[in-house]
Image 1 (cartoon, one colour):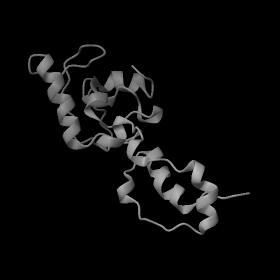
Image 2: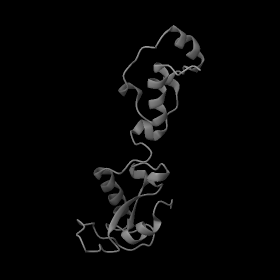
Image 3: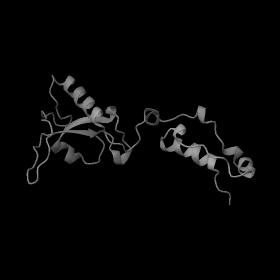
Length: 145
């Protein structure tokens, strides 16, 4: 059985998982037989269509960074007269505070949530974000909204 060449593994695998190929080191082929046998499988990587998340650097299952959370909150507030509002139940949310042992946070604490959950391949891009109150976010779990 023929094993895939190093060229195929280091060139195509990063593209399939959303990494940029230029971040992967070049590796020579094991031998000429690999080149001959793999010739029909070598693709022109310059013409491959990449998922928008791969180009933007946001991988499926990624978290929101601090800047992206702020973008989601600002977008929500701009649509709601300067106040952040839960996009499920409509309650005005309050900023999250550091949780303290033995103290239950308020039900209307502001959470930035993935519309398409991380567990289902949702990205940490602000376009996949929404503001939910703590109560609605807990009820939603990893379901799509």
